[in-house]
Length: 77
Image (cartoon, rainbow, N blue to C red):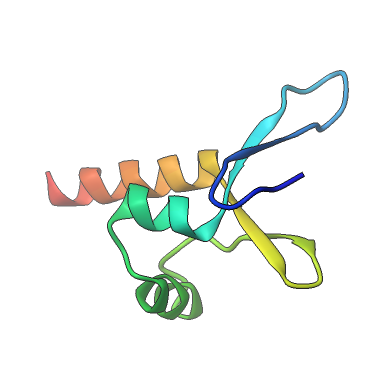
């Protein structure tokens, strides 16, 4: 279950470890991006897309955000 800004682990089955999902406020905090920037960059293909958890609930895989951040660091360096 998702509560507020908490990261939620998703169970993929016994052969895989759970993946942590981040709600938008947590993604904003980790990336330093605003809501509008996140959605604009998603439209342009410059930011990972979230997974749908319900009719009006989305979250991002922590691994996707970490990989995106790492790719940004690589380009800057």
